[in-house]
Image: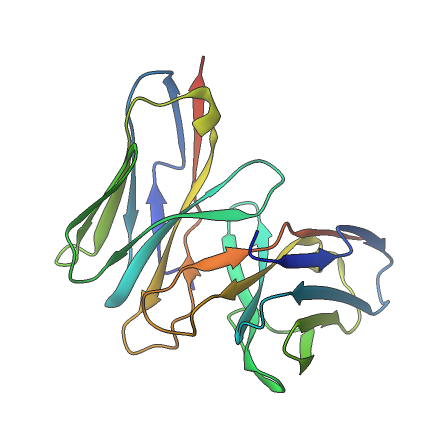
Length: 115
Length: 112
């Protein structure tokens, strides 16, 4: 499992509340990613990080922010949760740097429901 | 936007048959990867093929890549019920930031 832990695994929250999801890795890899998975859309990149305090936006970043104050933790925050953010969220890492020929390793996912 | 698009969206076969899934993509790539996702679980990497490779094997998996057609195929031979899962292709764009961009996936059901 590449030492990736996502927490919480399940969460139900109310519209308008802030929510933070955590991705923790134990192997000190530099590159970390947050994706969301929705039926009919596959996985879409929200944000990614290429080091401590170095982050960038992905395809569907509106309404989300991230922080990476330590190598091992990559936090995804929904500033004010909306029903459209109901989804399954996956964290991923790349081992061996961000070279062109490395695969990604995924966490088990967080199922978020916004009511 | 989605880079890879898998075809078919769904595939249902009997155990022992071969399963073939296709992936088309839009831009030049460094590599193409295939992943498997069992229901309710995270994605598991299966195989990576580089842009200068045309075919790659791993156990019962065979992947081909045709960069002129911007397409790839994943063949699972002698399928088993345990192969039931969703399969995704992902690409790392050439000249990009090496971020895997995924398609929508193929749902494979293998009947015992």
